[in-house]
Length: 247
Figure 1 (cartoon, rainbow, N blue to C red):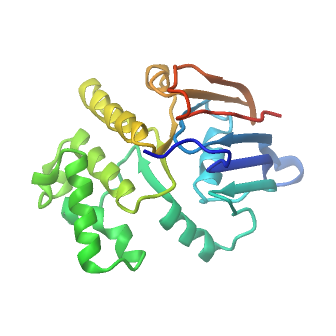
Figure 2: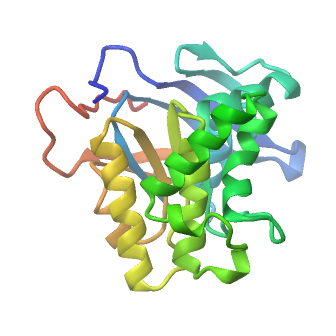
């Protein structure tokens, strides 16, 4: 189990994001600072236009802030070029999306294996990791199945297996239950909780209060600012501790 430390896996300092200029300028983020520590399970909520998607893109190294600093696992990613950002994304972040983002005519096993191909992991090691990840999500027996042969909940579990196979510093999930029924939603959330209990850092973007309530910490955005940052579930002493700086 990974224990909480004094060093955040995510350290965001007064970041802003501005799109356009002049009359078309949009200030999506207006100065956000927060820390997320190893072992955290954080839900980020906000209405459309609140800035949560922009913050997710920055945390996922899909975009860079207009100003401020962002350290991921101790690395300052605020000024990295596109190539360096792609390397960081592949090695440090496991993504889970609402639409699953699986390659249609490729088996579940190959979908899980793919990020490790890009990371130059040896064939033997990536096959071992892919199988272990599928077993972890309860689909070790469905590795040969194509995405269209799996239910929505099973496809999302394959996506989670793909996210954890590279052993990233954090899992970033964008509306991971948005396309699922209530039963599959429960199964997927139980997986996230199990991964978090093992020490993995989980950050979930969601608009569903019931989903956010399963996290240990809630960050709510409005108009590009943090308006709420609360720990709303009991945590085990010394594990999953969350501290934040909100400005």
